[in-house]
Amino acid sequence: MGTHAERGMSAPPEVVFNTATDPARVAAWLPEPLRHTGTQQVEVVDAEEMRARWSCAAAGWAADIDVEPADAGGARVRLDLSGAGHGLADEILANLAREVADNLTAG
Image 1: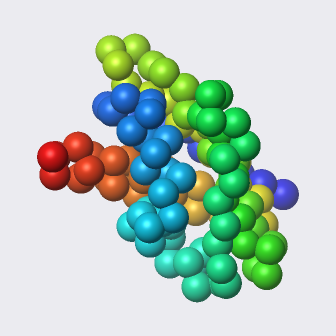
Image 2 (image 1 turned 90 degrees about the vertical axis):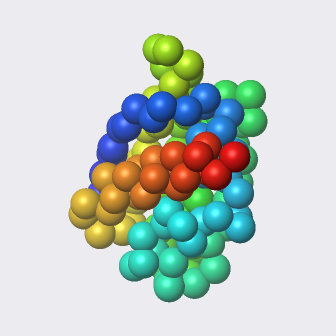
């Protein structure tokens, strides 16, 4: 059974999507329990629609991320997480929002 979470972010959807799909940045937003379960892989399902899937076959979890434009130039992110602990979906989006904000303030 999976969990679902949604969150608005004050960044352009392209910035949010690029942050979410950058393998070099995954350690900044993927929670500890999922980082140490094996090798995580990202698949950009549809770049135009800003849909991607992070997964770890060895641990049996997957996270589907959809990023859409929102009011005032922001983004709305929807996450469906399967095969992982309850509550991690909200933590993933909170961490991703922090990483996106850090990216914007860094320059």
